[in-house]
Image 1: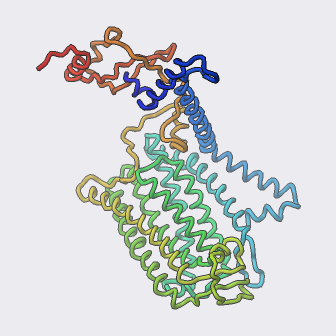
Image 2: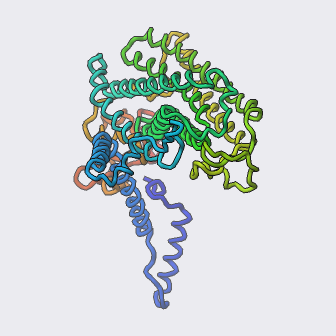
Image 3: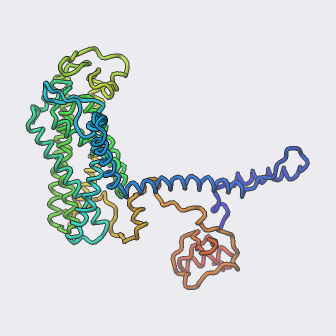
Length: 499
């Protein structure tokens, strides 16, 4: 093999090392002369550094894999620890109850204000949803998939994941629609912006909003735990924007419009998992019908009604809201006050729920811009949906273009299953210690051992065979794939006859 292919050093570096070594060897009496540098020493340092970095990444990957493999037990232990502290230490109940119960209740109005302790409630639900998801998938939905006749391991996991999404989004959508239908802003876009800022909200609204926020935060982890799909970047960006919008709308007291947008999103997320489940159950016709309903719902909810809400932000907010700043609780609200010249007022709502909260043209445009960025991701997914629709019309059947290829699924042992569960958490390829890599060496034609039975077999360039004793290998650097490649070999060694 050519030396330049086996070592990560350029010809310039090698020449520089050669000149330095010659200069040092030519003047051995000079004071302070050190031993000539060797290329092998530089290579050794490079290998040691790479091995150290790879070992560190491998440790992180194993730790991440352990967490994924034991997420149910971790969630149960954390919840049991919380309830144990609450029961055994009465003095700590003032703090532990904030994880399980809504904070900032106003007995005079019967509503809840917003505050920092709401983050504890969100953390509790992140852990609870993680445990529920793992437990329901492993002990209920995967056995259900097996009883339904699904044999492949990956298909059973996919079935369980989609069934879990139906359970969650179904519950969230019905709760959100109940809140929306019984509110003052039901089918009234202008009412979305009245009474700004809404310092206090109903208990059900707060419960619904914080649990939904916890779910999307947990989805940021799930999207990296599950096997990556073709649209992993769009999915991760979508979850980031969704979490940012929910956090911003909650702190800026815009839960009304947040409720409407969540309802528009959740209804679509019911039909797509349903279509996928029908696909795994091999109900092809029913799957295509469900996919058609999904397409109609997607377009109407996420590209018509959603853009109507965006238009309302552009057109109705300047008419319905008195621009300016407000401060104080719901009972002693002050405002509108002049907007400060600095940028500190933009982040105050995130740290001081009763402090200064402002709304002007700039803040309105900021929220509108983020919503339109989310719409751009939805448009990318719409193109994928159109491709699937074309397959249905052409008779190929509905198939999610975002999904990974399941046609090459193989059943692996337990160790390989752990790697699959990590889902490339740290690095895209599994780590191989350098000590296990073959040692490549240059050989002549006389030393090559080419079996006649391998001359017609595909062999990538530079592939080396590993011996079990010393991990050494010899390579020719030539690919032998057939008669034309044998002619190439003869030409490389000077034995081919001229044409």
